[in-house]
Image (cartoon, rainbow over all chains, first blue to last red; front, side):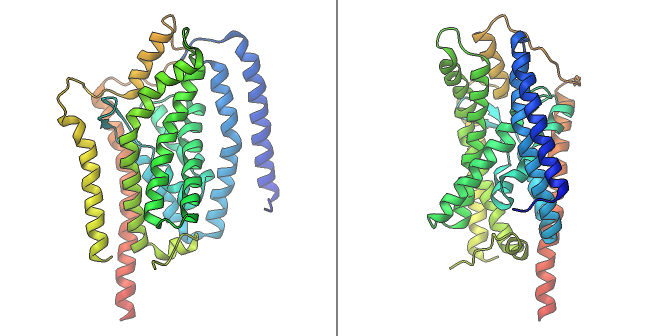
Length: 252
Length: 100
């Protein structure tokens, strides 16, 4: 892939920023303050996110430049994440509420990097205006919801496509898996940050999995189904756009 | 969009409603609080001496304001999606008319 001068600059800056945050994290880890996530963890997850955000910005820029037609679709994918992550749905497993992520569909259509940027916009909105999530945990949340989940959806879709599973079904399964994986990552992040005195990191991870991942299972199914529905609608009404981004498979 | 697709979509949406509504019908005294709240409790159980070191930049007065803002988030998204589909559906319709 050829990068322009500006793009190279952006990537270098992101990597440099990531590296220096990483250094700060090791330094900060010496006196860990108390919090939802220790400062070191916050900085570390933030550092991990930066290169992905730069990658995402470049990807978006390219879509806008080369696939003008598909920009409406891209905006709709961001909006889809906005809507789904505002829906707090009760779950029979865990008897608590959580919300879907909505980042899988965009990842399947436009590639996972794009969702790093769209996802962080959603998370910023929630952290600043809704007191949901947080600015200090923005890095960790971005990694789980806007990077890890979308990459799983992207990969799962590619795999299912290779197995000749029909497109809407692949989209549904891929989005459900990405949704679930987001909360698996959240559990891992919390487990590493708050190791249990008795069982250590493992016991904590199991504990948080029980809260987040189990609650999420029905919601992941809902997200998968909704994403498949939106994809079916797009197949009917947005053929030119899907063709533009190489997502149009003629139904045999 | 053919009839089969329409029925498939309606059935799928019904299943979603079912999954979301089913827990409410279960006999239980759960208030379906957020999973993040449960996680806070779990952190406190693991590490009782812990105190959050940062607070949210804004302090919402109460549940009503929070639900307003969540609603706003959904509205913003829904407007964009609605605009998009409105555009796409009308385009398809008028393209077909123009072709005839």
